[in-house]
Amino acid sequence: MRRHVCLVYGTRPEAIKLAPVHAQLRTRCESFRTSVVVTAQHRELLDQMLSVFDIHPDVDLDIMQHKQSLAQVTCRALEALQETLHHLRPDIVLVQGDTTTVFAGALAAFYEKIAVGHVEAGLRSGKKFSPYPEEINRKMTGALADLHFAPTARAKEKLLAESINPEGIFVTGNTVIDALQMMAQSGRPVPEPTRKLLEGIGERLLLVTVHRRENQGVGFTQICSALERIVAEFPDVTLVWPLHPSPTVTETARQLLGNRERIVLTDPLDYFEFVPLMSRADLIITDSGGIQEEAAALSIPVLVTRDTTERPEGVDAGVARLVGVDADTIVENATELLGSASAYERMRRSACPYGDGHSAERICDALEYHFGFRDDRPADFEWQPAGEVG
Ligand code: UDP
Image 1 (cartoon, rainbow, N blue to C red):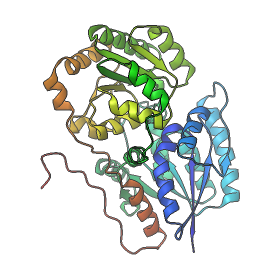
Image 2 (image 1 turned 90 degrees about the vertical axis):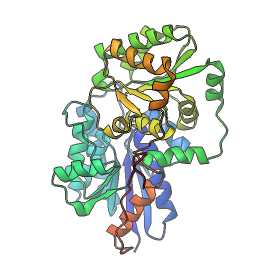
Image 3 (image 1 turned 30 degrees about the vertical axis):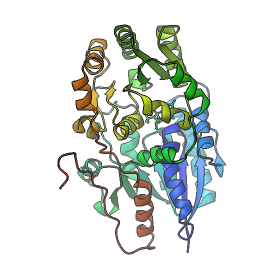
């Protein structure tokens, strides 16, 4: 008998990272029937991605409201999701990552006694408020999940340290690498907005995205001041920042960096538009989790404007550096990389600890194993740091 897998998501990174899982599930229609329920926690960003991946949700809860508080998102999502799952009665709910939708989806499934699979499980900064509220969303989802798809061996260790049953943990790699490869293999030409952007930039491209809640306020002002100084110091560098639609982000960035030479502030780009831009970047400054992982796959050095990370693999592999939000530290690190070819090359090594493009397959193999469609437990994703390959 086919099993019903229900994907629940609500934001841009979840849509991107679940798209390869959805595509893979569709190729296994003898084992699975798939449905998609979206909360639309971030309406505009989600819609961009649904359109890119040509996904038409079975249920769209459309919960987003202007200036929504975390409690409001949680309550609206939880109530609507429990009712939806009560009627759909899937065999398992899959959630991805660390947003409020993820936690509410897992909790609603638990209330309905439906199994939960957590994609990108086990990432931990160990700091309650960093990232906020995502660290705790992810932990609480871990407590509710039956299957944990840990992207790396380190994430598995974190889950084991929390006494999660090892039987339910599968190391799969991160599906964002699959998504990136889907874009590369799509054969689509570079979209017009990106082509225009790329035409307008000079020798080197500095790509920036900053949006985390904990960076807003003083941190944000410091980051903007650092960016202005970096662009002033390197006349061959153009900075491009596709702004997150959060009013705080947009207003502050436009106020502090708008109408400056070689600084381009754009609306958010869809994934087809964003990936070619990111691939062309010489340096990335970001607080985004997904972009850290993608940059590692593309061998682009990343400065992460945070003090802690739940993704230490990139830092250990040497492709990412944690630089916090202090303006001088950000400028110092960017200056070193943009000013010294050897420092830059050392960091640009080809090392992607996050995945190999087969994560969605491993997740679906694990689901087949869980539901008894196959006897052999799928092998874990293993990453060998460069130089240690036998
Ligand atoms: N992204 C995109 N367009 C943009 C900015 C980012 O498609 O204008 C993609 C990016 O490639 C990555 C994901 O969105 O896959 C990251 O989303 P976000 O930074 O919102 O979330 P986080 O990764 O921090 O959870």
